[in-house]
Amino acid sequence: MYLSVNIDPEKTKELEWYIKSILPEIINEKLFEDKNKLNAMIRECVKGQIKATINDLMQGKDFRDFLRDKVMEQIGMKGNDNE
Image (cartoon, rainbow, N blue to C red; front, side, top):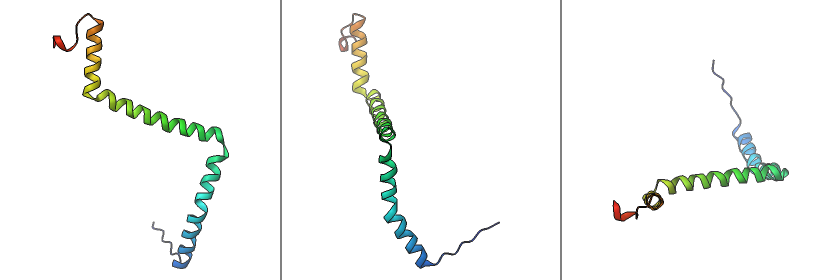
């Protein structure tokens, strides 16, 4: 079964203009309507960014070397001297 919808090009332009002009206003209204919900969304975004940054740092050679040296220090070895 196929469904075909033909919309008058003039109506399409009118609809497109309406969406472009009203949508930002609706988004702003809904977004700032509940301050707690907005703050929760911001926290989740920031948490996600922090997690991604931590993962990037932990995968880097500098972090692995730093961690290795700290572990070696804790067990009484001098770090890079005993590689």
